[in-house]
Image 1 (cartoon, helix red, strand yellow):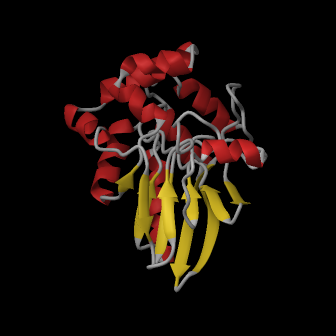
Image 2 (cartoon, rainbow, N blue to C red):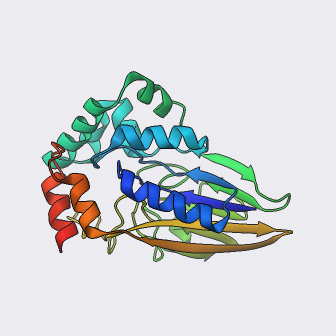
Length: 243
């Protein structure tokens, strides 16, 4: 079985289409979405529609909660451009879109091939706002994993790809489909990379492999996607895509 992990789509329709096409070429059987799907990018409604059509398991990220409970974003950041962009994205989506977001799960557990298990979350099992990094100390990571165990554990949130072994468990961060970062930023302004990121799990008869994928995107197409948009973050994204 091949399972594609997608995360942090952030309203980037162009990037999501590229990832879905790449996954189709690889023969992916199913998708798991790890959250943060429809904020900060120019096409929140379109991305939600594509995700709904995909029919996959969806995990609720912090930005998904910001759309459902608008006051929460103020506990996460005081940056006006982020707050304004989240509010703009909320204005672009429908009541049906919000109802779909409300179906997202905090975490999910599934069996892939009879013996291989996958546990999915957004930031960590105990909070969708926690950051699991390659350099997170093992003792701290034990607390963040909150006693959960699986063959593979997958989360996003940091926008930085990662594959790490921790006490026999494979920890995967597929990176960001819509807004991959060059490095972990912890609240600082990021450098956004001009490609789309995701991961593919291949599980067969107890054998498991994980591939971190990067799908090339045309800078000109990324620029066209934000040019003329009233998204408050549009000019900043345009500058990133031109660099």
